[in-house]
Image (cartoon, rainbow over all chains, first blue to last red; front, side, top):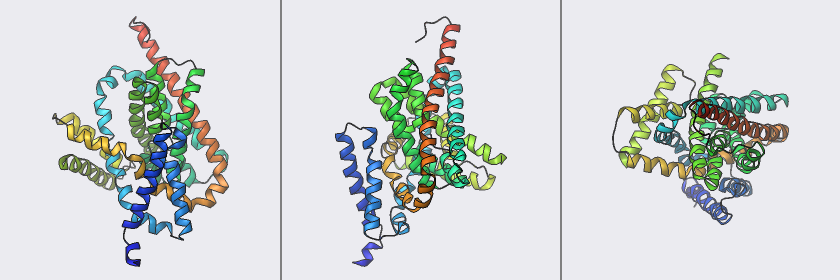
Length: 230
Length: 121
């Protein structure tokens, strides 16, 4: 029996079962951002590991295959960017200006605020890519000497907050253009924002997906340039 | 199907090789994204299976980072010490980024629409 525990089978099965249960909950809530499956699956899995006194290293090794898929998923972000090339060409100016302004605001404000709280470099590096989609955030954080797990949790928080506040905030600012609204929520809150945008309006959803994909590339590039200068 | 998966893996692999050889500080997968974009631009072809594979990956992205997120269990000390700062930074930064991005987009797109004397949408 104990040899079974040494194979990836046990923890992969546990992870998929817990995630599926969380996903059913999320579907029943109509995909409310606070019911995102990761938000519920993660603490439940931590609880199971603590209760069974399983070291994280054992769990991480067993579930490696899931994390491995993140790499090809990031490469695949080229596909939605390519599919939207006509829009990108037509709206090159507003998209470029908004993307750069948004990417720089996301990095500088997040890093600046934790720095004011006296946080060490690992935390600055983990929060710098907070607005990107999770796999890019984790890869960039690792590159800069941050903690990928912390980056994953920070990106998750950004997504929930962005998805929940976008509509009231953008109404308050009287932004009526669904392209601007969608793009902003994609740049600031990646996939969570895009999922929320699609619930509101198809145009907003398409621009949110574009914002997510472009900001993944923009933030990674900006941070790599900054890292190269330091 | 296999061809599309192979294309993704080859782009990522080439990205990793470029990352290591040139010391370019971008993650290999992000360089791979750029390479796939170049491939899409240079090789005109029906891409249904590639779109299906990347669509499947994107649709199931969430479960892929669960193992990493569980790793936060090891960061208890950092979270109890800097958790408040992290929460404040994430909330303020998310709202500020939303506002700045939307305002800049609307301002630039609005001015362009006026320049070409089209009604602003």
